[in-house]
Length: 105
Image (tube, rainbow, N blue to C red; front, side):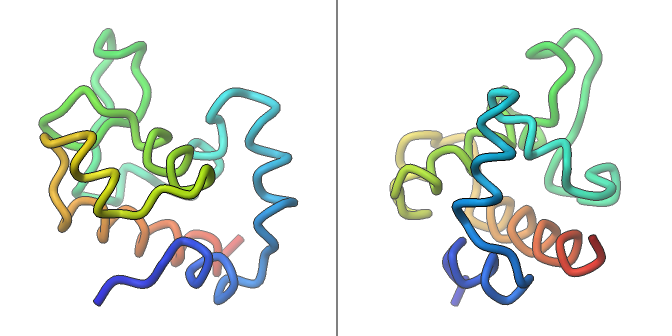
């Protein structure tokens, strides 16, 4: 079973409010703060597609949308319902990648 974003954040040792205050300064730039998105097979960055931001592979859904929705209290199931092109496996891979990245940071 996938862990919640708060559980991932807590296990990585950072506080949610501090993280989000950094994120809010650049409208979702926190997704860029994660280390090495190119190493996460669930995402892709295509020049000219949605401004070249990191997207869930095969979609036009920015990775930052996941973190923004979780920040505002959405559940993973909510996110999957709202963005039907994104799979649960992709969300779990992104959250696990974020956890690993934060553990290194």
